[in-house]
Length: 431
Ligand SMILES: Cc1ncc(COP(=O)(O)O)c(C=O)c1O
Image (cartoon, rainbow, N blue to C red; front, top):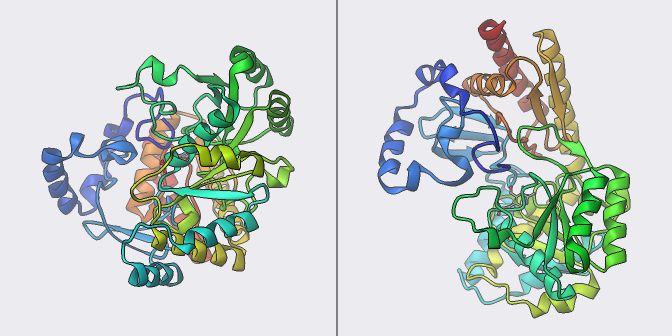
């Protein structure tokens, strides 16, 4: 499953073929916490960050982060190419964002009555995001995708939502790729198509018939274990055209890419304007916040639905978000991350070739990914990422990575030193 721990349809975890690292780095504190966790947390951990899904030696528990680095509970330091799965974009403990958060907190405490910050933040979204006439806020990306779908249904009075197969939009029952505990009814109104495949899109549209409420789509294809693929322009234009012709709602799920790839919306460079877009992850540099931004004609539907949460109105997170968006614009964060990402991607391609491995390095440079294409790709990725971590760089074996503006060119060189060592080790193991 995308974002979640185990890749869909993946072979069972190949980590046992890599018995090396656990003995190499201190992990006694991590093991002690895992033992305690096993008694009180389901399965010792839940969700997508369960250590058993990762290469042996990946820690379960972390104790510290700063700038571009994280430290596990045993004190092992790594350059973090996961950025907390995307939220960190300007560096851990960024003083500007943390000050904005703290000063709002000092004024308002944890009062959850709406504050003017929600107006200021909505104004910021309307200013920055090309298609946005209004914005509303929640906590997680799944809140945003659920709210967007609900608005689309309220606006159209229809029920069917089309989504791409293997595209991840959150862990709510109607989107989650994990079948446990989900009923057929939960997903009865979801129809799937294949990303970038016009024929399958048209089949899905035909299946929805007169009941098509919305098409939800990520800006590019970024499913786990696979190369990231740009959206085909004709495909994106067809989605827009279908939504126009059928008076259905086009929802761009920009939870993962939003503001990392473009501050105006990830399809703005293509000239395609969604009706609703969903944001979360990096919009407040790690403080919990998500957003749905929409066009004027959907404002009534947005105000008609009952969507809320105890923690949705926290103004300190909104203050952090305002500071985060301002800082990103001021420093042209997308260009900084693009440059660092290209440095990383080019370095990985050269290293793979020089060690005799065939890989595909794909994705927007601010969120790159590398896939082995020979031998046993997933096994190789597990061994390679475990070895890179042992040498101080945290790369995920089957999910795209994230860059931040805190990654300096020197950090990328160090991460590349780690990956070079990992390629060297891998070629000894499998060569
Ligand atoms: C494209 C996309 N949409 C939605 C979500 C769900 O976000 P969250 O995990 O914050 O609920 C994710 C999470 O990875 C995502 O990548």
